Length: 292
Length: 159
Image (cartoon, rainbow over all chains, first blue to last red):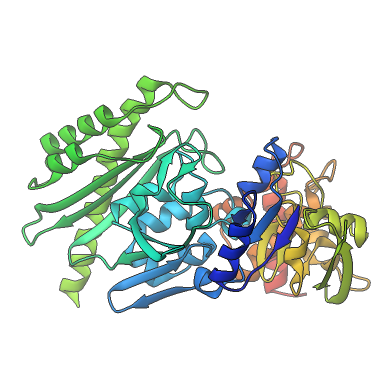
């Protein structure tokens, strides 16, 4: 197996185009365990961490650009990013240990295409766009459209996710991500739930997005839960309806982490709680702005 | 098969070695450089026994391809002690009986150093989260956590 560390996107794509068995990696936190687990070694591993654009985080006007290979510990340590996307930051901070978060990346978490990837529901609720470099230049794709099934993406072999674009949240907007695992750290989601809310001046929900992880072959966006929250004042009836809609949207598997019934129920509970956290964050921020 | 030449800095010393491209940094440290402190526990980034600090970031050496280390600066547990004095973490682990079989100890020491480099006065909870990527099957962790907290005190207030 060869190792290559290109410094440009074009160079990386040329390596992939020339070798149908080559794979890209950033932190290798999934790639190495998969090889250890018996997946055939590729002919080449292409390290993306020497490409500046994949390793940079920037805020240009109202748009964040997060390099696909940036270690997630960089994001969780970024106070401005975390204030804009507290749910995404906490999802990134749930992936493995400090050792892992110093290597793992949003691009890797997405393209590994695990149904249980923690950062993906949080990216989806924030309408993140994946910027993908390919033969025809760059295309911009909603994150929810990248993964097509467990371990499967819509990327061509010589396409690379370059970065994620995230619009700064509008006024009165915040997000939250909750994950259930049987222990405190170092486990894979039984269920993950991301919620983003926008509250109007009266505290009513003017917009809501809900996405679930680990309950279906891909991350699931839940329009019925979003509709239940939108227009409500987050009263019990609206939260119960959103929870029921989240449970209904699940298409989970039975495995050692949880049964189908358990996952369905937990998806509803986490959706409801995450909505409450997102709303609390908005109210806290509004309160701080009112004080200043 | 041709081997790749890697030049880097390990524990302050300039070193170079030859490696197969697919080799892990952990094996290169152990087999090419004779630094056998870092251990392979799981080989998949779960146990932390191979922890090193590379370019200022705590990482599992089993997940790093050896050629990635070219140009990097690496600290292993062998780099903790000075010429004739143990690092406070090492001394506190000894005095606090924070090890039994010792396999996990180099990884814990490095993870604890990475924590204290960033946060010289951690709470017990912060220590426990910072060490969540290191597994120990002997101690039950309590003596490790207490030893790290004691080392933090000693580093902040040298005798």
